[in-house]
Image 1 (cartoon, helix red, strand yellow):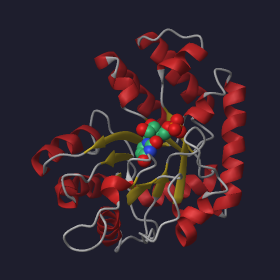
Image 2 (cartoon, protein in one colour):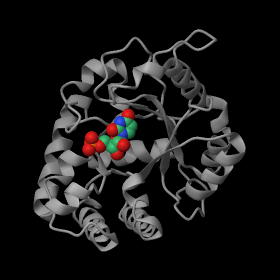
Image 3 (cartoon, rainbow, N blue to C red):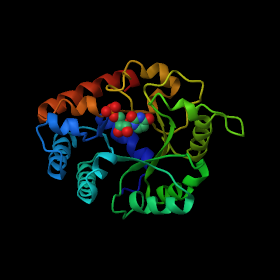
Length: 278
Ligand SMILES: O=c1ccn([C@@H]2O[C@H](COP(=O)(O)O)[C@@H](O)[C@H]2O)c(=O)[nH]1
């Protein structure tokens, strides 16, 4: 990993290549649409097809761990290799695994994904604060040390999210508000964009929560889940410049032709550039 912290590397990558994050979600139906078998070979052809087409023009990729895990160790090997290839091409990789556990187990996840020589070393990892924001501390410590980033679930894109995320904590703020407050504190000493981000779905209703955390806001939910580029300004307000718009099925569905994937990514990037003020 470079000496620069994740937030600085993310800002530079988005300024250079545009803000789009392409989600790599090898759903069974997408493998079928690409005329590939639903097995580890199909997974590898699909994933490396996306990598070969887009690694040198898109700033950020977000492989969804679930779709690699479903093929066991062979699937994890593809995730590992894809992450290496993407990073060698100058792209940043956020592994979307939504890890979260007691602190001592978070040490294990940090060793798997965030440490400098981790087997699945990535630029950032999605984590869940369900066990309490403080339970994430081991991951925060390792990320600070290695220069990696974290994205903590705050206001997720699914309709069930508000059931817990809008509930009040014993201290007063909502659960999402407490997560955002924790992230703001972590980013307080950052020079530029901080490395500790929130997941805030592009589908959520405009919110009273203060989204300005001086860190990145990963926004899934675009395309297949109904979120739109135009809707981002209303959701994110003054924090819109820190949004990392993430789209999976909508981009991947353009394949398998490399040219069609590139056109889809370029079109999305252009739309996000305009809306996010690049
Ligand atoms: O709030 C969240 C957090 C994560 N996701 C993940 O993003 C992609 C969305 O895929 P699309 O095909 O663009 O809908 C997927 O991997 C989710 O697990 C999310 O959607 N919402």
